[in-house]
Image: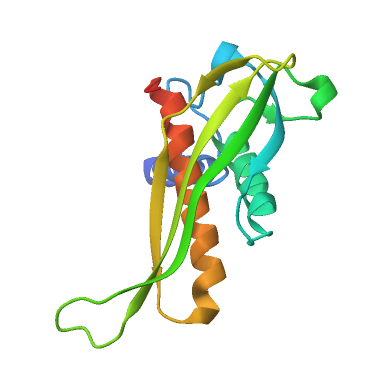
Amino acid sequence: MSQNPTFKQKFLILAIFFCLSCGYHFVGESEIVFPNNAQKIALIQVINPTQYDYLPKEVKNFLNEEMVRQSRARLVARDKADLFLSVVLSQVEVGVKVTQENDSTGKYLAKVALFLVFSTPQGKEIKRTLPVSYTQTYEKSSEQKDALIKASQEALRLALRQLKSYEF
């Protein structure tokens, strides 16, 4: 009894989509590689010189998601870490109004600039990424928080991308 080849093709396509949507890594896919090939990272601080006190928690949550999705490393407690990480929010701006020609609705900008600093558990700095920034637009003041969170997430994603290509 032979199987229908279209069934096999459909099953294969479905399996590929399932694997991609669940964040599985395929051999050869570029992944985040932390300095010293560390697998256990402690986020020791998010330096946030702003009044937006929700940003450190959002940064930590997004960092954890990206590490699960793009690396073999995991966030752990300080006493179990091979590497310490600080996220430095060097610039956070919101409310800058921009208008475009022939656009009667004003848009506002939420901008986040940051860099990552890696150090040993003894406190010696090993590496730091190049500064990156991301700007997100929004239209209403009620959208400001979400725009700022999105800008911080995308800036963090850009910083982590440097760890894939050793650009720092």
